Image 1 (cartoon, rainbow over the protein chains, first blue to last red):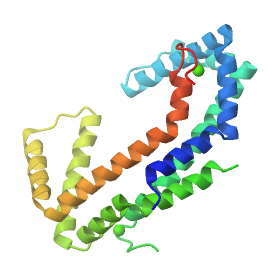
Image 2: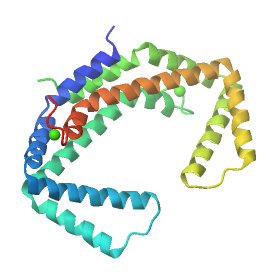
Image 3: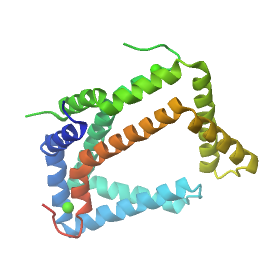
Length: 120
Length: 120
Ligand SMILES: [Ca+2]
Ligand SMILES: [Ca+2]
């Protein structure tokens, strides 16, 4: 009988060969080989992470910080390759999310069917 | 070329047919068809979730609550079927965790290789 680990490795290989991943890798490599673009994206991510951490710790976020984050966001949005990379990352994250839903479906069925009798 | 979604469905099927899932489902159904066992497990989970929520919100957890949680834990540990179910859940959660690592390996490679040059 097929083994979940073998199938997972097959899925990883297919994912790596997918259009979504190739596009992501190409854009990622383009941005990372361009010093100016890389610095712009790194700055944007640093600001995003700092704001997220503050939010999670319930800290106050100043008007200045919000404006700085917006400025960084507009900068990366206007950079064609970076904005394409960010779209490619969102698509990949959607695919990974969908895959996780598909894989955990049997568990959802088991745990979600409580009190409604068995489905199927 | 194979499609990630098709592969994910294959993996979900293999996972559903796996020893780990069959054992989990059997124990889950046994516990859920036994009113006393089900109530014991539901109580335990309710207490666990309440404590987790308090912890996440940074609320104080009383000595009494800790003792109550320990008592519930000892109760479920002593119940053979429930303790087996909890072990089966841990095994399944390990498998799902491993699968997630395998699937996101290409992304880890892409994002983890920053500054160390490309890892093949
Ligand atoms: Ca059920
Ligand atoms: Ca890289």
